[in-house]
Image (cartoon, rainbow, N blue to C red; front, side, top):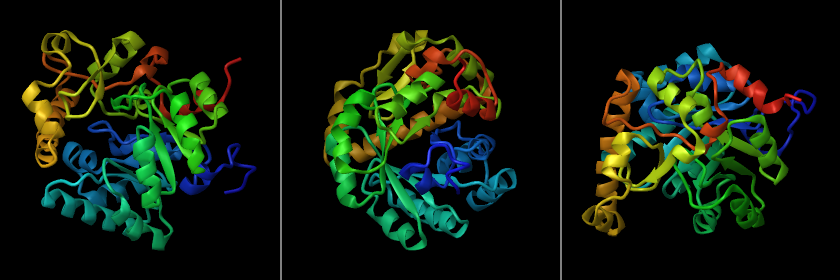
Length: 329
């Protein structure tokens, strides 16, 4: 890639092999293959979420990757949740990683655990690993593991979110000298430019891409994003056992956002926390899939971040990318 084609020739765009420093973040169940491929085709990089690809959208993993290759020849990435879990799931992750390497994927985003085994697998074939972090403590661990960059998940993110502001994360994490990508709260040109201006080498978007033409999320979900404002976004630990950012609905108001005392105890216990998170995750996977397929009902919830404030129309992925990088003035 030449710098003439790439107006942002930084370490992140070089690592990902892309022109525009934008990641379409991995989302369950919203990472349908058409959306992921469209983000890459538009100049950023779409991240494949394997559980979404296989279980929400019904593709064989290898064939799903090959299908996306018919939609774009540009780089794709792969997301892996590497937290210690059931052996069956860990074995499945390793198979997915092997297939991804065989199919030519070079950019990987890991989260929720020790990514050393991923790094050891992909680095000999030129792979790059960025890791999700929410604060200085987790960033230090990731750096010690040997990752190539950090996805800095802030307190404005949709889905799993952090507690720190984008500015605080930049202040705390720039000491490591790695490429930093801002994840959370970016949905417009101004936010994109602001994050690059304070030192981030890229941004990761999720909510903005759900409200796109290529995303196959139910229209009710997209409408909820268009209607919501920043004040409507709340955090709950009832969905997956860790804080998740969602749109406040009558159902969420009725059940509250705090996990009960027994659940909280289990989520903090050295042994039980993995099983508790697995239970929450499986439950949320089923609920999210149902909501995505059949639309809204009383007990549905929609994951979204505070970038809803700037999202007021459904656009193509290409139009979203162009709006991000070109001034309207």
